[in-house]
Structures are given as structure tokens and as C-alpha cells.
Image 1 (cartoon, one colour):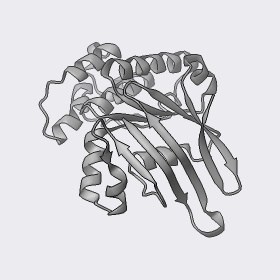
Image 2 (tube, rainbow, N blue to C red; image 1 turned 30 degrees about the vertical axis):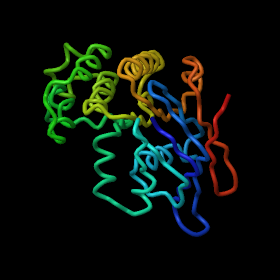
Image 3 (tube, one colour; image 1 turned 180 degrees about the horizontal axis):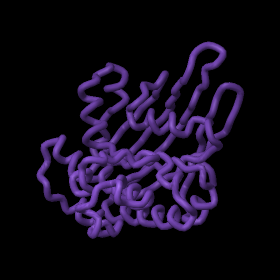
Image 4 (tube, rainbow, N blue to C red; image 1 turned 90 degrees about the horizontal axis):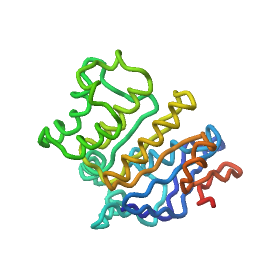
Length: 232
């Protein structure tokens, strides 16, 4: 579903530049992998590069989906309209703060990605996600009426509403207490498995990652550089 090799991203310039490297990553359908490391090491930078929000300095290859779409070629040729289509259609994002629109109900927040892509309102994937994350009673409420945990659950459903190939979540449990963080993580894992997605989750909560036994890409810090490598 996702196959990346030789990814390098550079943030900053000159003596303040910081390089973020990913030698290899392969994610199969239904697989979820955690990206871990200390604060400021480049976890979010790596996720943004994989999510096509940052252009890499160099890249060997990037293939996405069952047909192995050559995203690396699109990046090399700077084909921005096609890259934007990949972002909006095949990738789903969960932000730390949820990012819900306050003037839309939960139902309309969830439906927004489908409306923007001209998709039909009904989606079996969305129905499954709403059920898996127990959001049925909240659909007609505004975000301000929800708890932080509830908003994050809504953000997870909105991220998959357009039925992407890969879900990218940046610290989805950062604002939650340990019990709610564990509950959201469990629900997120169930959602990925139920819908057959692939997922990358940035997290600094190592005990939570270990509790669920997820494979990890861990940060190895060096002089002006962080390399992300698979950890046992």
C-alpha cells in the first residue's frame, strides 16, 4: 500500500539546517506503524513529507496504493495538480487539535471531504467508522459541545470519510488523559483493521505504543540529522 525508499527532508538553512532521513518504509493493507522519538526530532516533518505537504530534498522512490502509483515521479517533475489530487483523494490526515470546523455539525464535518471531492453522501466506510468510534449520538452536535476525546474521534472519521489508502495521524492522543488516549488508540486500530487502511501514527507516548505492540519507526539523532529506522 505504501513503499518509500531514500527519503530526505531538510528544514532550515545553513548551520541551522536539520536533515530528516527515512531509508525505507513499507506498509501493507491493514497495517499500522508508529513514528516515535523525542520532541523536536522531526517526527511531524517526516509525516508531512510522506503526506506530500513538504517537498523532499531527495527521494529514491515513493509508491502508493495497490497499483503502485509512482508518487516519486510526480514529485520529481513537480506536477502539483496531480500531487494535490493524491493528497486529497488517497491520503487522510488527523491533526493534533482535530481541526474541526466549529460552525458545522459533527455530521457535516465528517461529510466535508466527500462533498469537496464530489462523492455521494452515503459511504459504508463512514457508517462503519461512526459505529466503531461510537459517534452516532453526536452527529447533530457542534464541536464546541464535545469533549476533547470526542473531537479527536470525529477527526479520525473525517480523515477516512473519502476512503483514502493511507491514514496519517500526528499525535492524535496528545491532548488526552491516559485512559482516553488508550481508548482512542484502541478504536483507531480497530478502524484501520475494519476498513483495510494503512496508517502511520506519530506519537511520543512510548508506553502506549508498546502496550498495543505496534511496529515502530524510531528516531536516531545525530549531528544536524535525524534518521528514522525500524525498531524491534
